[in-house]
Image 1 (cartoon, rainbow over the protein chains, first blue to last red):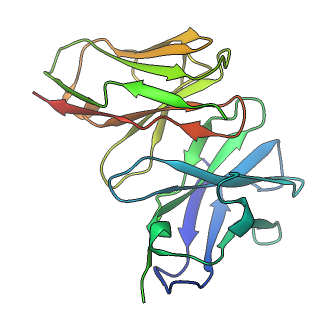
Image 2 (image 1 turned 135 degrees about the vertical axis):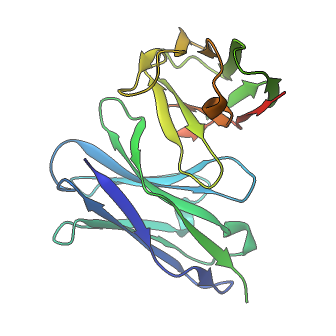
Length: 120
Length: 106
């Protein structure tokens, strides 16, 4: 059974860079045809896809966030990471990591989510 | 850029009711649509993929239909654990979600 777990600071100052890591267990992040995504949800609002990385390392980003987002993978640690630069209060949200297969593209496994607050 | 519009945004129903939630896409997406259920403080849970295929372990009272631009999620007989928020998601281009439908107990 695949499990995903987000980790990282819960508080980030405005204009700084938000950094989160997703640790995958129960399977190798580099095996199979999977996308590994980051998704966020502001309190009381809907879901916004941030971006994804393929097992080969290629990435796709939400056009609305592309200039500030970097997603990377560390196969030796079975982790992938999110960096979001120049954050503002609007980036305060619960951040989820999730897996999708390349042929179905729905998100079949999710982390529990981690709240990141942007505040001075 | 494909937009998804769910209706209604809010739904009040009773245990045992049959409910239907609609998701409309701004352009055709074939059957590239998924449905999720989210309960407060929890991650979304995949219910339906490819518009009508039930994810393993999901009760059969959930069903999905549609293709192109109009899709529906139906719960045949509401159970207490079904009161939650439901999201559709298009899979045709970069992932995008509908705004959600909050299902509450009447």
